[in-house]
Length: 236
Image (cartoon, rainbow, N blue to C red; front, side, top):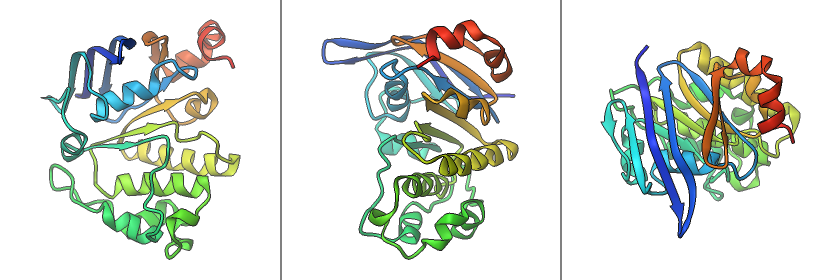
């Protein structure tokens, strides 16, 4: 396997406060990696730095072999990295279908596998809501929509920030089914989550972040068996 994303020595500050302390990550083609940690551990900041939303003070970020630390978010997206933030930013006055079409484009190598009809197939709840304004959707429906919208750009890799947060169990189950299907198709995904149990069912690998530092990394089976790490860093 070849590395799709490599992060080394990543440091991020908000004002005078340092949030990330030398984060190192390497994600291979086809991996679904869970970035796990408690609230405030640095998960979302890591995702924002990779996506270009916040500028790192130090460190390197390589995506597909191209250095991109400090790039603007639109430039990162053009390289094929799709970022789904935790606050579900839909276009509220536009319909579900229009939200998808707004994001439609070929991938960086000309991929056009993801179309509206394919989104209907993998997220059938959206097809039933195709003509509804996105602002009138529930939180779970909006979460499904923003994931579908990200896929419409035919990305090389997905970054999902807290995709299960605040959602009803049936919706979490639906999103889990989608992520397992993407993994089976060879997609590359990084998921930032507090919900360890959700990630145990969808991820292939895991890293744990605490106080802005990576403190553990293993495959998902290793995490499942490591009660000490789960208790120390992930128990709520």
